[in-house]
Structures are given as C-alpha cells and as structure tokens.
Image 1 (cartoon, rainbow, N blue to C red):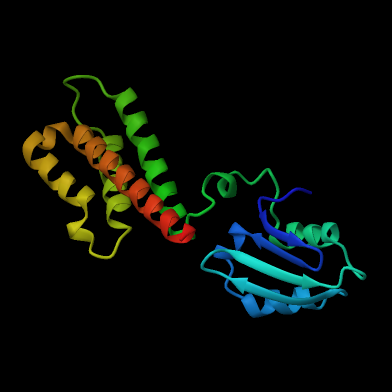
Image 2 (cartoon, rainbow, N blue to C red):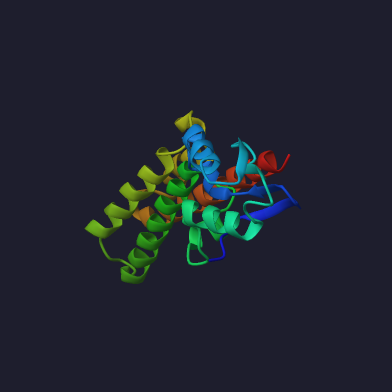
Length: 192
C-alpha cells in the first residue's frame, strides 16, 4: 500500500516523514503511544506545524518497510484519496471553503445554462445568490472587509438587481481568487 506521505530522511534506525494527514489529527500523544507500542519502535516525535513524524527504531527488530506499512494503514492514505493529493498543505477549514465555492460555482453554471435573455429571475437564480452569499460570508474573520464581499456590494450597485447572476458570478470569481491566495500563503508558511 503506497501512501501519500514522503520520506524526508532515511538512515538505518531513524526515519523522518512528511505526512499531510497529521494536519487533520490532534491526538499526537495517542499517535506517539500507539507507534511506540510496536515492537522495535523506540521513539516517535511529531511536528504538527510541518506535518512531520520522526521515528527512531531498532533495525534489528523492525525494518523500514514494516514501519511504512503501519504509517499507511494508520493514516489510511492511499493513492485513491484525491483531496490529499491535490490539497496536501490545505487545512480542513480551507477544504470546506473550497468545497462550498465549488458547489456555488456549479450552481452558477446551471443557472447560466438555464437562463434566457429577458427571462424573469427564477428560484434557481435566487438560490445562486444565497449560495454565493453563504460561500463568501462563511470564511475569514472580518467578513465585511473581504475583497469578495466588497466586490459583491459594488457589483450589485453598478450592475443592478436585474443582473443578479452576473453579480453572483463576479463575486464568486473573486472568492475563488481569495481562497487560492489564502492557500498559497499557507503553503509558503508551511514550507518555511
């Protein structure tokens, strides 16, 4: 079973791994206790900020391959977990924000495909606006100073309520750019 962890340092008796799943885990003492209870593993040190796990082991009692199998099984990391492969350095909260934004983008697409010129706004159009507003307001600390909120307000004022889908699309696009910017900032912080 090949996991989505990476080996950073490997010398006989010591193994250091980067394990993205450590970002989602909070029970580090239990993880350390569990791994040190395996015959041959002497100590485990976890650095959650950089998603690192260092394992010291007695090479006469256990080999590296067995340890890697335990790591793969414990963190349930397989090559079929697309979120971990795509969003390795993204926090669970940011994953939720991306998922909300993806759903909103899908709703906007459906509403545009369903929209015809001159047609009165439908319930789907209002659902798109509500979804966009929820997506925009559900992340960040100071919600009313976010670029996507400001964009939504100015778009509504300049385009008018009759162009509600265009307002939702512009606001959503700025939201996606903001989420990508936050993700890249977090990735840089985690790398240093």
